[in-house]
Each structure stands twice: as C-alpha cells, then as structure tokens.
Image (tube, rainbow, N blue to C red; front, side, top):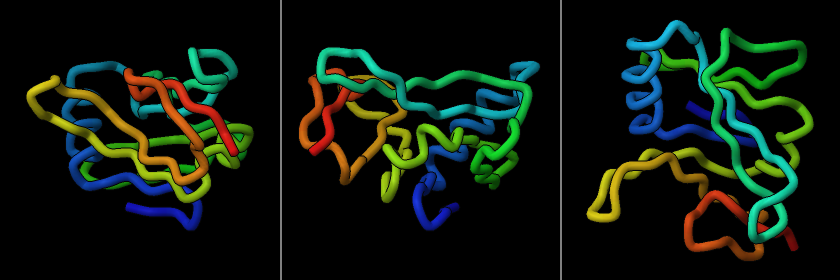
Length: 110
C-alpha cells in the first residue's frame, strides 16, 4: 500500500498483521525522533489506532500509522520487512537520509 509520501511493502503489511493478531493493539505506529547515533532515529510502537491527522495505511488486515510531525522526514520512504541471515527486522528505505548507522534505525538528513 502507498501514500504519495510514504509506502509500506506487502511483506511489511503481512508481518504487521501477524504481530497485531497476537496483540491487543490495532496498529503499528512509525515515527521519527531526535537521537540515535546519526541524529534521528526510527521508532516503532504498537498503538490502539490513529490519532488526529495521522497518515493511515491499511492492507492485509494490518494498519500502519505515521504522525504528521514525522511524515516530512519519511517523504518518499518505504517500510519493508526483511528476513535474512542477519535476522528479521522492519527497515525503512529513506531517500532523505544522507547516512545511516549500521543498525538501520538511526539516520541523518541532507
């Protein structure tokens, strides 16, 4: 599923649906906070649902929400779920990130 500014791969939606099926939460919130080793960091929280002006992306029995403050940092970005030799994790491919740390949760902007 996609919005003009942020998209979520089918693989990520499938994983979110699996997580939500075992939790009382109704959505995965993706946000950006100051901090981390590169200046900003991604945060993932299970929440009851969208609030106010949140961007809501739904599909495959899953809901992903992004708050309006974080959305400019995620413009053009894509949330994916990766399962490889290094383990399983959500990853954000962000064209706005000038650099990121090795863990993939921290980034800096242009």
